[in-house]
Image (cartoon, one colour):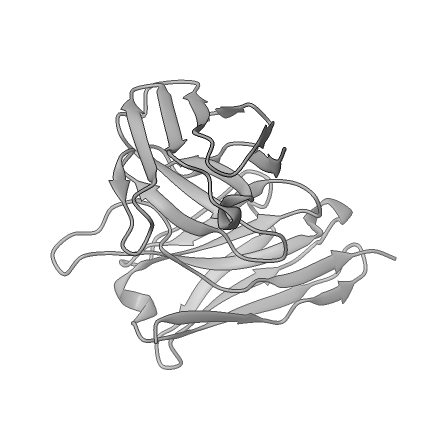
Length: 123
Length: 106
């Protein structure tokens, strides 16, 4: 079964750090674009970061310089290292797949989503 | 940055109604638009990609249209399972979501 399962969320103080992980099954993380999307309580969806098949990474302005996306090909996982956390980073964080075909890869829609992991930044 | 604006923000409808949700982009995004359905406490679910292509397994009562800056999601006959929040998403330049449209029971 193709699925994504996030872990690592929790309560952290402002200025602190947290590392989220997303375990994939049924497909290979490194063969696709993989993204993080977040949703603050009662709010809409916000794209956070992407790692391309070739390894290039991009970030929303709101997290640039504080968050780092990476993948572990041996474990087939996607990670998000979050530093200098702020109250406004409080959200459910989802990992999602932007699928590549066997011959091409370009930004597209997110067809597989994890169940989400809650991050709360509060003192 | 490309901004996405959905209307209405909330929509009250009855089972069997035809429902239309509009999404406008701040600049042309060609057909690089997706629609998602999200229920409370759940992850979003992809419904439509490339403005009008139905994702596998999604009921045919869902359809999408538009190009450039104006897009529409239509639910031809609203079913009890369709009461949810719907988001549009552009992927012409990175990714941006609309603010969402909540479809409520009338």
